[in-house]
Length: 431
Image 1 (cartoon, rainbow, N blue to C red):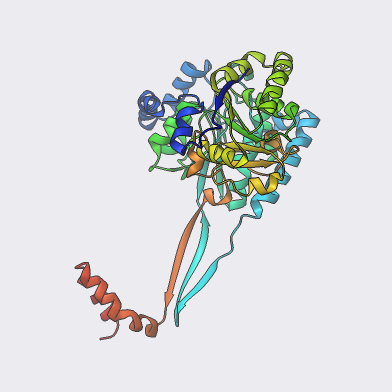
Image 2 (cartoon, rainbow, N blue to C red):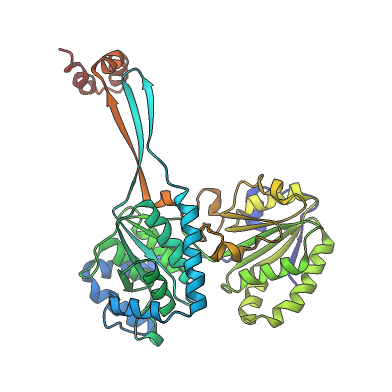
């Protein structure tokens, strides 16, 4: 049975929600102290430090950090046909969504003779991190690579941990997914050492401009440490789902979706917010049936016991306040008129509407991106999109007359800031 919180007599503030409702405690600051010497070692010793870290943390020393092209080709050839078909379709759908995010240059006429053109320019090189701990994540290859390719990035490098059971190479399905996407620069490197390798560069790997991709707390800490040296995406912690439901929801579906999220990680957070005590009771009964039958029962039980809860609220409006305050990575809406309710959500990484749009659809084949903000950071951060891999550049063009027209106002502002050379640079054009 999930821990139950009765919030029917109050609508808690966002701060109260974050205090009351469960999330795994992840102290990235402590992890930063742990990974700092690893990153510094990679910065100073390069490949040797990465190899030493692989032996220490992954239990294997790769023969080569860069995966041979032959190994990528062999992994693609060895893909199970059903997996290959699913990956090809996932790539196609992801391209449809991310290609639609591309922005054309926009020119704004500010005044006669003065224009500002807004351009979106791809970064030159990116490093894409793909986890390889408990399970392989070929879907994360798709989610990282496709938006970067659609953004126009010319140089992509994928980093994924070496596997003892794969002769020191990353997981073969991860390699196969890279090959299907045309990625031939893949490194058998994981953890903080992979982030440092990408950020600082080593003998075998040229440094990148942006690093993206989910990982454990040490990957997150390393990304925080190198932020500024390179750009990074939102910090990703343990995965999470919130489900907002009323009496119309199907308890079988709700329970199955909670289990599906808990399957990821014992630290995964699973929250049900409902205005129906009867639904909460029915979901508990369903969990009692479904959890013992699931393959990763121990992992699921640990997650639900540690970070699982049901919040009982007065109505759907109060439920919206709760899920907005919690700002989930994934939010499912199982209510009457679910589309209208979803349109009112402000804070979530991704929203899944109705009984037939579960989170696993977004994980694999919706075409949306599953690299999303966690830990409440959806209040200020977004998931991976094409713009993650681009920079906005303003191009200013002005005629002589347009510059002359603004010269007095420019001089006034320059004088107010005691930067008279600014106005002198303008006046020089009219002497």
